[in-house]
Image 1 (cartoon, rainbow, N blue to C red):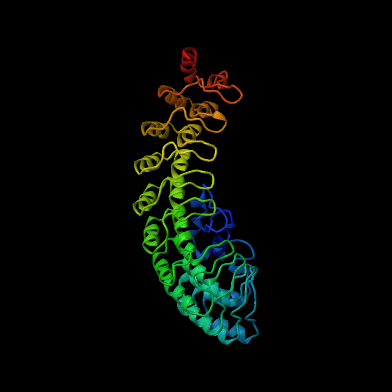
Image 2: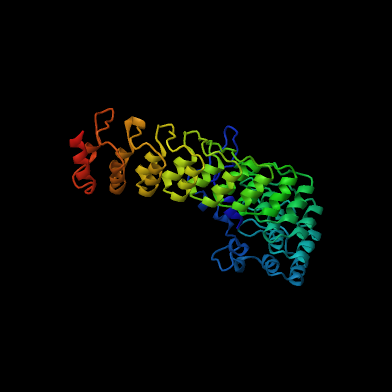
Length: 408
């Protein structure tokens, strides 16, 4: 639940800003980090859980509110129960009433003086809890009582961020109209409401945010690419997001999608004019990333759309080097068929054949040799490919290597 929303660390998913000092979008694993979308309000409050967070361990008022019993709640309040009672997570009865969507209980607790600004142990106010069931009516009650829209949780999340993440369009509109932070406000890790809506695939919220100025759309495009949200990519591009916007490491959304092998997303970006030749701060283009991961359809798509098959990264490595190092024989085959130089020399004069042999990728080494790779190309220390073949390694490649060495 909200803990999943706030459990993201700064390095896990980037804000997508090109401003100096922002965190970098990781090269892999972004899709796993975005799976916080598997939400369930029952989980975090311990339905069936053990320990002090479970409802059966709460005081009487908390249990009555959680169960939605106005009569019992009123009786307990008259008997002296405190509206400021807390569970072990620091939640008040008002937090629970809002979370459960019990409108009569929210109204009752507010009438009895329940503090709308109360924060739990994670820094969340009752207004933060309203989006879990899309309770715009509950939010209106809280706002009329002065609930702070600018309240930030421990991870810097505003109620607006929560509404955007969970697709609560009416609630997001209500929060945008209320005095307080606008759509440009970011959480502690640089994510705006647009980033959160993009991560969750919340198209109506994104349309609303775009109509309010489009703050964070470029970064949201990178998040959508990492999350595999083709429909979100289309919407963001139609709303003015820059197709070649870069993250802090200089990667574009196309590079992010290529790294993950998401062909459909890549097609959307390319159809909107994404440039496959752009490089990140390490000199890697989208084709380098797709080749390194072994994503053959992505490599085929990029090669057909004008990607440079012999582009060199900051270590002078080509996509073929990356494919050879990973043992991605079919990717290497396609790159060679597309004109890649089989004897391209990279860092320390390493060729794709050097890297395939060093990593023990026999089939890839055989392919390279059959396409003219020279085992005689030496490193600065005079090493040739034959020297790298140790006893028992590359049993299939050794006869070919020996023949070609003798021919040189």
